[in-house]
Image (cartoon, helix red, strand yellow):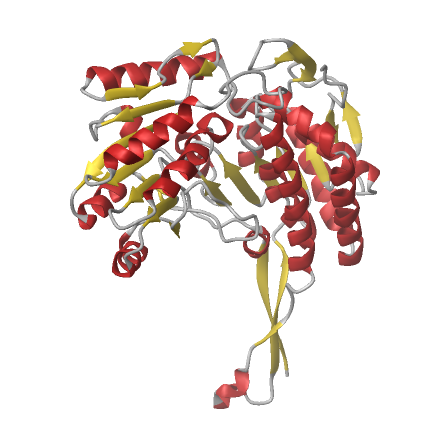
Length: 475
């Protein structure tokens, strides 16, 4: 199926077919077919978009109108669910069934933003609690921080874009969006939906192009007040360093651990780890990567995990039967393959998979992997899990914490003391008991510590970040 949706950038309410740097073909990761020819923007396109967003901010848009537009957009996306899902599948090789789930989540994210906006308001401060404050009436109100620069990743090209756009619009912040270079089409479809929903010019601008040019221009533009970035730690912390006076909020990577205790439903853990490790070819910030299993159950756990992994269907993302498709490009597939080879050379045992065809890496299990192997200590962002053993539960917690990252961690145990200890001692933004770490509810406070970022997303929490508190006193 060919893509037949919008291919032009969206700036100041107009469609722009050619960017500062011309145009470029966009190819499908799975089979290399040309999907579209898209604009390649630059700093002048970003400047025009930021100026349009600034004008929209100064003009203002009442809350009830913003919410009407958001509600209309949610309805429209739901009505065009299949079109959005096929676009996602084509541009990032996400299996079509998984892509449909993403579309549904994006609709929910918009609706959570609408609900949060209805209650995000004025708070009273009792100044007369001290003698000096007597006779004063005070309150705080939230005001938009300004123009939001949003830099989005490829792995959730609709929902993670919506996680930035919907909260910003809900609180009255116009947006300049830079979608991932490989996945601009979902963002352009989203702009089309908002345009049709009646969003005035300047409130949403989509500029396609590279991170080094468009992303850098968005992050460093003097009239962008807030930058929200999801992607790799190297790029994210680089953006923060390049814009030290801005509010830069980062949601970055991880190599999420799963601990399977001796006292646990280890069979359920193995079944869920198949989803956690291989959904969208392991290209998730919270993809289950490092699995630590008690020595008494590790053989049975690995056998069950391997059997289920061998049953996964690998192939064309538009095939309804497919569970795992390509990673984002062949270069990334080659890197994942190299990391697997290096781990095996370092003493790891290949249980399942390990082979590559083009951009498709077969779902892979490695056992007894050295802690210094790249596939163990870095973020693989591919369909690979490692299985290592432990004897003592404290040893498992230490191994899980032995990481530069700290986004999500999962623990399977029926031992209450172990569960409580894990909650206290695991150094992660979220801890899931009797669940894999590959979990995100769109309304939760989502984010991590250490190299995994410096924020909590989720509509209400993002909206608090995108506003400033103004304190008012009346005497």
